[in-house]
Image (cartoon, rainbow, N blue to C red; front, side):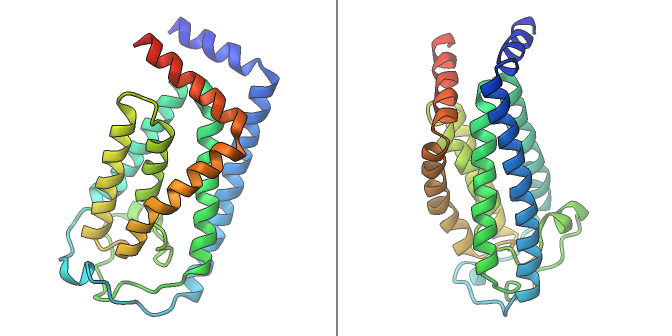
Length: 220
């Protein structure tokens, strides 16, 4: 515990780290506001639903619990990792902010209506508030864990954990008919591009992040 506190004390005392982290959270907050506006815009402009070769042959399953509480646990897991290693905060927060921002652009451009077949309204209030109902493309539940998998690729175990979470969330998005299949599959390709943009756009933060992963490998 003392080592962790000393680690935080050291990094937060660095002006460059403090400025970069504050900038990261400002970027994240701005991205969330833009995403909210884009989601509401998508609802107003939503067109008709379209057919989907996978969903048309896949019965609706109740996966609300995994989709909602799994996402909450996923967020808490990332929080624990960042508390454990503060050097990872600037890059992870900025890359998440970039992900949210890019997704907001996509959902403001693509206005597909509700999935044909009218899947039942989720009984879970958190899920109803979590999804706008027209922000389909692309799946954030699938893409964000994949972004973490790419970021932590240098970690011995974590990238496998995040890959598994991404695949589970992607499967739930299809099984629950929360997303069109293109939303799920495209998320991997778009997120891959977002990661490479982030590592170039936030090069210094990414280098600090890599240093933390190397240190963890040495300690193992």
